[in-house]
Length: 287
Image (cartoon, rainbow, N blue to C red):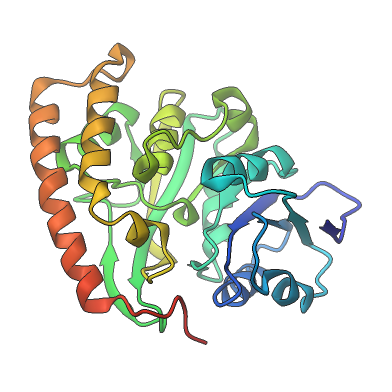
């Protein structure tokens, strides 16, 4: 099932992989449509939802929207990879169905990659706000001790491992070239919690990162979030990821990063579960 079609290729593909997202996806769509950088396509790939997702998307007539519905449920990995396969833009952003972009998000991030003529940067990422199901800000997340600018790829990888955390952030805060994605290949959900960080590491093997310190995306924590759904598995998943990375010589990980990462993964999970208990409501999203 397809809705809308553009006559020219867009600069940016913003792709929303959706499943049972009727309660939240409207706000996410609107956050894309009001971008100050408007040369974009908004691709929504519905993973065979049984709720009213199609009806919500159908309320929008913007020609930049394409709506695709999978004939069967593919799961996160399959749906994210269909987003990659269907995207037509020069740059690619995967936006979870309940997250929000600030109006200038694409303008700020596209400017970085457009100015990088020699393609030194594999990705550009930003600070983000963590919000609850009502859209209220819980906290902010920043890359530690860093101002705007270039971050060496190996430094970024080691920092994530040492802290036992995805310091680069959730997919909505990251923009990268579609051509680089074609080289790197698809998302891998064999370790579910780090499907995004695994991809950032693979991109960073091809270039450095650029950090924008403004909060240009809001990551929603609600009962419908994948990160909440897998809950206690997060620590075990991150430890499995550390083991996999340490077995890959190209990442150049040391014993210190491995030990620190395993400890911090447990600590982070305890803190995360406390946040979930305090702020996560039973409803997936609120108007």
